[in-house]
Amino acid sequence: MRDLRLPSSPGFWRSPLRGPGFTAVLGIVLLVGITVLFVTGLLSYAAYNPNLSPVNDMTPDKGILGFYLFSWPTSPYWLYRLNQGVHVTLGITLVPVLLAKLWSVVPRLFTLPPARSAAHALERISLLLLVGGALFQFATGLLNVQLDYIFPGSFYTLHFYGAWVFFAAFVAHAALKLPTALRNLRALRAGGREEENDLVSPRPAEPTVSRRGAFALVGGASLLLFVTSAGRSFDGALRQTALLVPHGGPEPGSGPGGFQINKTAQYAAIDTRETADDTWRLVVRGPAGVVRLGRPELLRMPLHSAALPIACVEGWSTSDQWWRGVRLRDLAALAGYDEPADVLVESLQQRGAFRRAALRANQVADPRSLLALDVNGEPLTLDHGYPARIIVPAAPGVLNTKWVARMTFGDL
Image 1 (tube, one colour):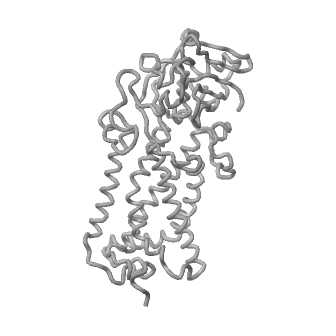
Image 2 (cartoon, helix red, strand yellow):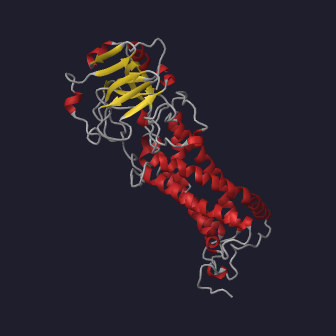
Image 3 (cartoon, one colour):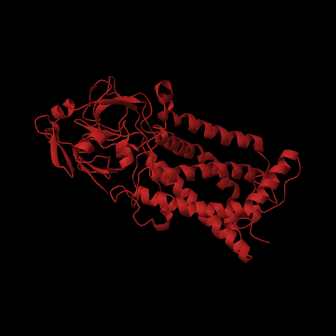
């Protein structure tokens, strides 16, 4: 008889809550939720247009894993805001479900012998990859959302490769366990007896909470996380409920420029001497040569307005702000292109991964894509990108380059 003091003994785990029915319910929730997370995560990566230019590519060795990439559209203009809001908010909301699922199956991590057959060995390997991958993906994602960049490498690279490893293990595990899970769910619905397996303790302790109570606890925790994080994708009173994430709460200021920013001019080491009207010039390059334009020259060009949000990879977004400036396609024409072309945009910013960003020709062609000079009827503030910034519909916030210094049009 095994020593009951060892976690490898079935008698060590005494909670009467554990069982195939409890695990099956949590597993089905995660099956749907993680599938949505995976799809929205891949779409988020595609939105950076990594195949357009090495400047945008945070995972240059992705190889076949980039098979699905496509030119990111500009319509609907709220596409990235929706995608990233769902991705991040759902990831946060699923944390209690994930922890409950891991708790429900923890006895299996200590099962001896490690493998009883080839099929059992495959299941154990998929389980280890699944647990390790889930913890890695959720931990790195949550730290990124909290702006706590403590990773040993690029978040984009780690999260991208981690997603593929985790989802491969997830699919293998789901294929092995889904039939059993569905059987146990049907038994629960019919009020029948659940199957006996290694999750059911042979010597259960007295229950302190019912399974229904445990589900309510997990669901309540998920609801609490949803309420205290989802608001940063909205405006007004809802935004003030986002207490557990950065960029929640009241807007950081008032007036035309009183909406959320990510990186300040001070953080980006912007020298105000370079942004002054008498020194700053936008350098536009293309087949027609080099053109240098100050704000007065830009303000004399045809100006257009567009109502567009800013949406960030961390899941926060602003409402639609009214931007006014010069269309990117007009600047492409000034550079010598009859039809809009790709463009490399460079900032005065001195540090940060996206000091430079590339935009596709379809983004340049959209009439709502602007080199913005004003917002909400007033000149840009320095923190919002004065003297000029890019604003493109449906693009991740980091591609909406602030403090623009140079624009080079042409194939990238």
